Amino acid sequence: MVGIPATMRALQQTSSKGPQDTRLITDAPVPRPGRGEVLIRVVAAGVNFADISRAHGTFSGGPRPPYLAGFEAAGEVVAMGEEVAGLRPGNRVIGVGYGAFAEYMVLPAAAAAPVPAGWTAEQALGLVVNWPTALAALRPLGRLAAGETVLVHAGAGATGQAAVAIAKHYGATVIATASSGKHGAVLGLGADHVLNSLDGDIAAEVLRLTGGAGADLVLESAGGATFEAGLAAAKPVTGRVVVYGLAGGDASITNWDLVYRHQVHLIGLNIGVLMEAAPRIFGEIVGELSTLVAAGVLAPARPAVYDLADGPRALTELESRATVGKLALLP
Image (cartoon, rainbow, N blue to C red; front, side, top):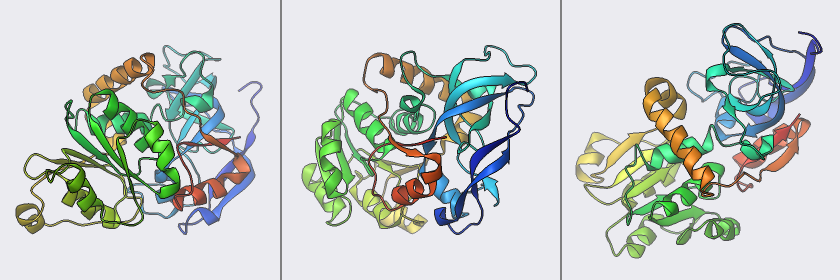
């Protein structure tokens, strides 16, 4: 590959003990694109909770250490494998693959989305992970209707922020949760109410705010005790709880719970599985996202930016919930 170095800087996960064992290396081989793939020069990589799960070895089907960390990146196409149509060197794209926390990364060409005109690479982060997850949870899976009440856990995170903005656009009353220092940011996105995620009885507050009815839809990504709070906050019989994350740890529910305590619709969402198992639905989501972007409902991201070498700090701060919105690593 002419003009492309043989080695690169990258973050390597060296154990399953967490982000503290993520190391910067300077001699990682630059990958070569295979059939149907493109090589991009990474301009910005997105940091996600899934990166933390992988670092702890709890991500189902995740890579085993040592491996190059990260999976979401935006950048410029610099080389192509065989049977790639519709892309050429110089195109600016964003996508999901392996080893995003690096100077170069291989992406499947069919899943590489264009960076919107006028947007920087870092502003596009979220287009292929956070925003599709939020929209899938709200619309095709959560069946959101105007006038309904939505409870969005982790409303200050990248996916939570998108969910708040989209839910408001479609006419919902939005109750979000966030730590006290992040309430202003969430209210600024249009949330009607923000509850403290670290203390207080979330379910009781939701019931109070809804006159005892409960939330029509709950977006649950925190896990742990928050999962139980979401179930208790959902409206009996017609309430839906969409689960797409487990940042706070595992949570369990039994058939006894569903029959006698929480008579709700419980829906699991993994955006990667949705892409593969329901490509038609995912295509509709992508089209709807384009409409929302064009309408200004979803604005370019303004991520907190870290140097690639500071990736372990970014991961640790995300894990400790010290951040607001999207995080980006710049190689």
